[in-house]
Image (cartoon, rainbow, N blue to C red; front, top):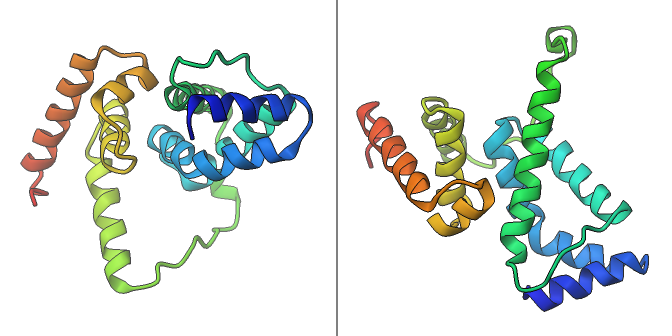
Amino acid sequence: MTDREFAESLEAIRARDQSGLIRIYNEYSAYLYQIVFSVVGSKEDAEDITSDLFLKLWETPPAYRPGNGHKGYLATIARNRAIDSLRASQRVIPTDFLEEPQLGAVPSSEEELVNEMAVEQILAKLSPSEREIVSMKHLMGLTFREIAEATGRPQGTVAWVYREALAKIRRCGYDR
């Protein structure tokens, strides 16, 4: 989706035309979910936050200026919503232990299950900042520049944190 198409989709949303929201959702829902997940680390929370992001987009479309890179713009919004959610949850007493366990999606093969477990173990070794950057780089395929724009950090810092995270992963024995 180009900046122009994104701006047109926002105009459609402002006109209460759902096709604009559908276009943005189809193009960016998985991308935004990965950003949110890299911050919150919970599939359920990431799904909720991502859904909420699209609801807010429908209710109050942002004042976006074309030409500024809509993908980074959306990434920043997603990251900020995820951080806000984390901050809000830190103020609430957790009651997860009172709830019935929820069954997640079942991997379609043993290999998928092993790969998913390995990725989770690797990411668990990283700090939240490292996990976010590694996830954005590998799971979403973003460049250091795009990650820097989305996180509001200097590009050099992003590259340094990424290299440090990879070194930590190698020290833990997860070198491929």
